[in-house]
Length: 458
Image (cartoon, rainbow, N blue to C red; front, side, top):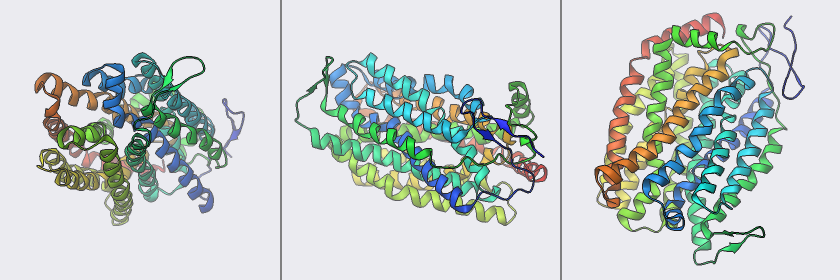
């Protein structure tokens, strides 16, 4: 019988699942999936609400596009990357649900702190805090989903998380635009300890507060038993050298599923970060209108793509396609990158919006399968640590570099803020082609890794 391990963070006892143990009750699994999907929504809103505030922030803090890009990307990504691995090691041996609750409470508080920042430096520090908090949710929540659902359904579960992510992207733009419309013309509000809350900063306070409340809801979910032969007799974290050895042994597979995902995220992050500013500069839309229209578009189309992508992966897996997850990612890149590269060059905003919507829909089909791809081929006891590596590539590198690459093209290549459309198109095309090459080379190795995972019951 498997030993019961004491949780070093929460003092709760967490038992690994025995071979052949029934899956958690469907009610518990789907309730957890719902709650964690809302967590994902909050993390994206809190991270990306700043995107729509670029212009008023530049005016108040007197900064350039490049400085704004550093705040959007590097300020968040530095601590996200530094904290990711150690927090993931905690997730591999302790109560993952409680770790998610602590994480969302912390980053929500830091989001509210952005609403009271009095300078560029103050905003930078608050963004560092958001990075620390958000580094803990992904590995823990993905690991929970993989222990709640059978292997062929993991893509549907992670795709559902992706619905939360895409709704979060849409709501960040929509709510940001709505707040700007509501507070336009209002004077700054004085703080009792000195300084003021500028009108655009209210968005951070309004989106940060619900996250604090949701951290309590997270505690009402159940922590599932850890499954698979790798869970063994105790819930202890594997030494880093063993994780590194595993990644080295399967390097082509993980380059495809993790490295390719990071390159793909460079494309998406560049579009998402500068999209609202693009409509404002290129077509003269107000920031409020641009945010609400682009946000509503994302909210409508992305959940459909997420569900279809997960169901398509499940269907192909049942048909015997062991490379199903990665295959969907490859085809999504193949058809979405050209569309997204051309969209900013359209002669009117509605054609640009339609092209962007189509590209997002096609690319988003691969989100759930992309996350599931490395979850289902990785042994349980190193799953969160491998997830943190994926987070580093898809969030740290992508969110740090994508806004910066576009800004550097604008400031130093084209030397004209009005050339933003060319910068976005160039970033999409170059990064998208690299993502396609990196991902497609791993199709056969991934199929072999999937077969091994099934055979050895990871």
